[in-house]
Length: 261
Image (cartoon, rainbow, N blue to C red; front, side, top):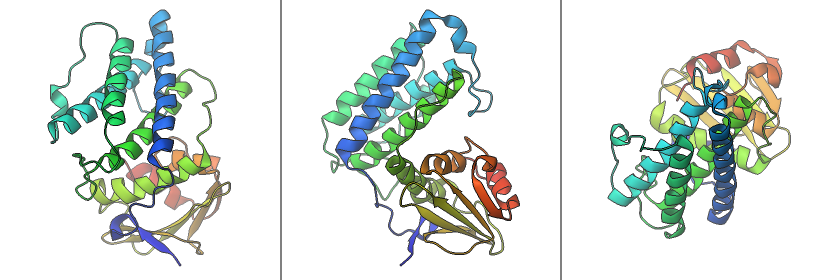
């Protein structure tokens, strides 16, 4: 049976990993970001490297963004309400130290609270720490991938289980809250199929936005690839040419052009 997700509002909490898995992953990815930032401090020219997957961002801008996110999340959880990101400013000292301190501070807060503990989040339906365990694991993983791409090396792979969960999170949370009427159309369908994990999604474009099901169905276009590459595609990190495609590939081009978070 197909499971409806995204704008339909069902099956939102089908998370593939438990809190321990998210925590271990986030710790490893954050440590890698710290390593990259420390290396850039030793070789300052690295800070100016462009992050090809993030528009005109430099590596320094990416690490600053991560430090800001860690600070925003910790501050908002502590305050019990959304903190204005504009009030978060870079402290004196190096950006690498800010990142390390902000990540450590957030880790301390999250470690001290159970996943089911009440916590503010920007999803009104998920006001608990479990939202942040999942979100921060994906945030750190994606930006670690971005940072390694900026170094000109092949980024370490994203595990298939996590990648499938990341695609689900995009439809579960981001589409529902930030792009509810996005990718609208007239019944066109897109089928995404992971080749190395249990992950399939059918996107149907309606005049009111997209509807998403976890299903296998013949569609106007099909895109097959590793779960990692599907995750990178839906988040705009790679293009459809890195997937195996059949049918109306113009729909995939439209996704890349129109779906921005």
